[in-house]
Length: 343
Image (cartoon, rainbow, N blue to C red):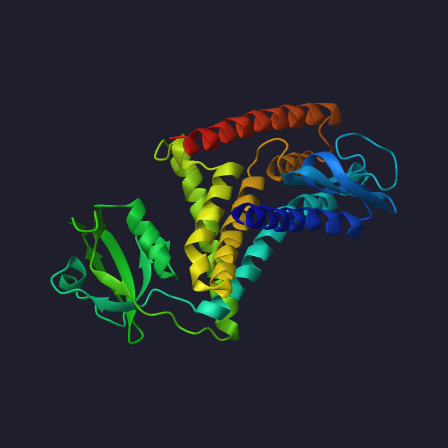
């Protein structure tokens, strides 16, 4: 069942991503030659108008292939005959649609579970938080140099900055106050804490659904960006990176842990994974790497600044090399995922 759920989740996220490219391409009169879900040989396809719609064998990845995307085709519907701004919108539409998908599912989750802001529920006696004067009902608005809206943003900051003094800004009865708290190491939990417990979840009204839905997506985007930074600085290792096989394992483990609580609980857990994975895909595609949306967008930015396009053959070669390197990286990640299954 976990594999089936993984295929469904991947398919939804990829279809929405490619749909973003597809709709904006159609809006600007660009000919879409193929809209496909999956990679590899075609399992099923049909043609409507100018576009072949296909389902392919490997249920990871997808494509929205446009006429003249990597070459100078003179046809009216060619990608490269459109304005640089039109092409920018087409390239960015995929990641933006992923963020919108994450936002919609975040609101669905909040409508069922409520939201948990940064209000302090209780302060444990004798802890640094109590000594600093924090009280139940205080709302933490900033920690370090970061503005926070969700309690898990606080938790993430403390996790990434253990054993550091925290400069905290909080609100009490409408008045802004500040304090500095040095965490203590709790041997029972094996982590650094300051001694606060979050307030219970609150039911969200329609305005709060949009507000905290935005904060949830922002949290997931920020987490991906911080994780990439930690990967490049060596704070994370290859064992902390999961590819398709690793993600399938996570989805299956999440399903097994939630299925005893009922269908609705499984749906909400899977929805949370959609939020996380869709935001992740959006961020990764915006990286300025050749063959990714971010790399294509970078070429378009250079074109807008220069007032003329980069040589199409050179751009195509760079994108081909980038794609080849990405495939090598995918093989490495796949090998890493499979090797972890046997350790």
